[in-house]
Amino acid sequence: MNKFKHWKIVILLIGVIIFLVLLTVFIYPKFKLKNFQEIIEISYNDLYEDNYNDVCFGNIFSCHEVAVKKDGNVDTKKLGEYKVTYTFSYQNNVIVKEQIVKVMDKKAPTLEVNGENLKYCPNGSIPVNFEIKAIDDIDGDLSDKVLVKAEDSKLVFSVADGAGNEVKVFKDARKIDEEAPKINLIGDNLVYLQLNQKYEENGVKAVDNCDGDISEKVIREGEVDSSKEGKYVITYKVSDSSGLSSSTNRTVYVYQAKNYAEKGTKNVYLTFDDGPSAYTGQLLDVLKKYNVKATFFLTSQNTSKGYDDMIKREYDEGHTVAIHSYTHSYSYIYASVDNYFEDLTNMQNKIYNLTGYKTMIVRFPGGSSNTISKNYDNGSHIMSNLAKMLGAKGYRYFDWNVLSGDAGETTDTKQIVKNVTSNLKSGTSVVLQHDTKNFSVNAVEDIIKYGIENGYNFLPLTMDSPSVEHSINN
Ligand code: ZN
Image (cartoon, protein in one colour):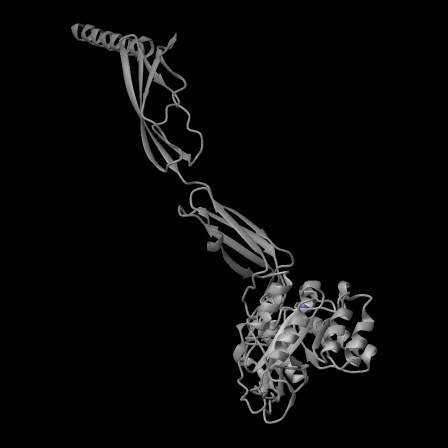
């Protein structure tokens, strides 16, 4: 009986304890942090937001809003781990929670591939006929790190950033080689050799879109016999691994250069460029008066229109009629060898039609030393080519070694007389004047008088005259 009663008390006590525990759990107030995360990961540059919503203090019946104090900052523009401490309080109750925020690189780079009609080679190589742009928010421009692979009928472009985030782009592509190799001559495509000068082969560079540098596979045909004047053509041919071939030529002219020595006497060659003009008749009268023969480098430009009869008169009176330029347009004649010779031939024909005489004497607009031609010749060193080519075609060109200064330095007739007379040579003097300029034409009589008084001969230029050539700068 006693024993039974004792058990009853124990059960009662256990019941009381359970009741108190439950009371504590459900009714005794405490902090509730439902959605608080102790570790969060966010992407670089993403927004970091405070993370403590649903925190309150209370029991099952009611829960009170708490005060929050936050310590620590997160810089989402810098990768790394940040610790943020939240202190929640309600009246005298305080709880401190730590949160680890990991700012991570979770974004792959962007990869853009632009290109039409993508291809890869039968030998597996991939010619670049596309443009790639790969940008990573952290690593920056990764365009040159992009890998390209050919897979069946696709090109697969891929790139990963420093954190290993990878992006892939697939593009349709055909397995085909449609491009023949390209052959580039090393050295000039036109070569001028003086008779018996050794021909040096500079070779070529051949590049193929699929095979790369195939210069070694180039076959050369044609020989140069530099002991014989003439035109020689050397042909270079190459085929790529797909059987596509191409060829290119180099032309070699072998010519005989003549040696025109100084004659050692006091010879003056008066030369007049850019005419005829309104002043040419007056000039011819003066020359006639002193029986002096001169040389006219003729044009057909605007200032000379209407004075064609002067060309006939120059020739008839024993002067040398020579070619300067039909157009006198630097941008045209120095753009190509073909342009130059077309212009030259036009002037030569015009002179021939007026006089019946085919002149082979030439003066380059700007002289052979001009550098203005560099503005128009696409780096082809046209003056070097033209000088040699004129020789090879049997022309002779003359520059000058006495400047009158009438090309812009002075407009004073007395000064022109002085410039010329004080610079005459003891051997050959080729004087540059322009019969398009009144003040220059007016100086001629005094120049002739001075020459006659001082023992100079006045001569027209001929194919046998001593050379007066500048050094070529282009
Ligand atoms: Zn000129």
